[in-house]
Each structure stands twice: as structure tokens, then as C-alpha cells.
Image 1 (cartoon, protein in one colour):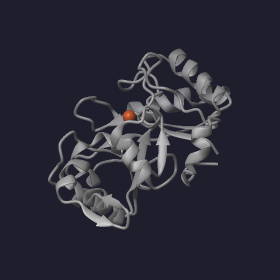
Image 2 (cartoon, helix red, strand yellow; image 1 turned 90 degrees about the vertical axis):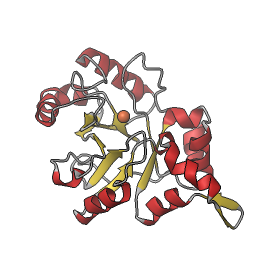
Image 3 (cartoon, protein in one colour; image 1 turned 135 degrees about the vertical axis):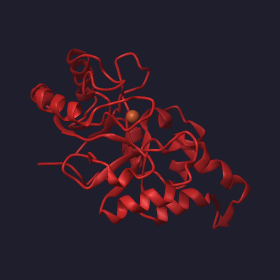
Image 4 (tube, protein in one colour; image 1 turned 120 degrees about the horizontal axis):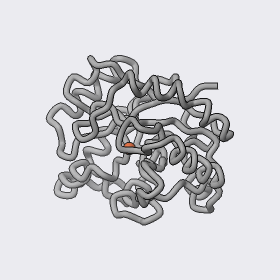
Length: 227
Ligand SMILES: [Fe+2]
């Protein structure tokens, strides 16, 4: 199934679409490019985009029928900012799964690995949103890189992988061949692709599930989601 599980199309709750009409127009374009299921993931606990978890849930209940009428299955999730002690807060997993879409701060937090482990102890699986964005996961390791076979491996990314953390990369970063996205792709670190689409005019391309590029990737299908 063609799933985009990171997008900000739940209208009027975060910095994504402002109206239902805008959301549905984007959904229509996504459908034309082959999407079958969406998980709507407004920001949660982001210091840059204040949101309210109850409003998010209410808005989803009020609008899900409109999304379904477009012929696309929808679930609610969230892009959850990794705060210290996040594991003690109310969380919104992707659909009815135990997968959390986690956004990291712009600078490496001291609690990064510790807090991810706390979430895992609560039986959640971690999907890191747009991993290519976090320079610090790549930066340090260019000076500490080690040699395995024919490729350089970056230890922080490997540490996360060893923990069982999944990596999501944005479609745009891949098709524009951004350096860190290319690194993740070429070294087998990429697990999932999503659009992170925010609005009609955000400049982000919609995933073309029928493209040869997607066919060539052999990305694992997400195992979360409802019926
Ligand atoms: Fe996002």
C-alpha cells in the first residue's frame, strides 16, 4: 500500500494547511500520484509550533470523513518533538500502531539517546522524521569515522540503528539529491519516505508513487495503520 505518513494536512491546527479545502486539494493531487493512505501528523510539543492535543483529536474526528470521501484512507498521528521527559507526556502514535514519529531539536540534546530508550521501554517503536535534517547526527562522525568494508559508517547514525530506530527521509530531499539524504540512501539507512507536505505553496513535491525512482528504492512498507 502506498502510504504517506508524515504530512501536515489536518487543517487549522499547526503550521500546515489552513483550511479543509486546501487540504483536500493536496489530497487530490496526492491521489493522482498514487497515494492510498495518509497518516496526518500535526506537530506536537514543538517549541516552534504550539499545538493542542485535544484540538488535534477533535479536528481529526470532524474532518476524517471528508478525507475518506476523497478515496484515501486516513489515520491520525503526530510529529512529536523530542522534549526531555517526553515519555511521561500524552503521545499520539501513528494510527493505532505503536510507532511514534519523532522530530529532533536543531541542536543535539543531551537527553537524545536516553529519552528514545525511555520511549522504547514503553514498547514504542521510533521513526525519526527527516533524518537528513539533523546535521549533528552526521557532523561529528566525519572526524571519527570508521571503515567497514567499502563504506564509511557514521557512528551516531549506527548507534540509532543499533537501537532499532527507523529513519524517515523527505521525498524532496531525495529527488533533489541533497547530500545527507543521498548518504542515507546509499548506505542503506533509509527506511521510509514521506512528503512532510504543509501547504499548496510550500514548495514540497508530492510523492510520485508511480515513478521509476520509487520502484528502484525497494523501501519497506510501514507495518502500522488501521484496517
Ligand atoms: Fe513535519
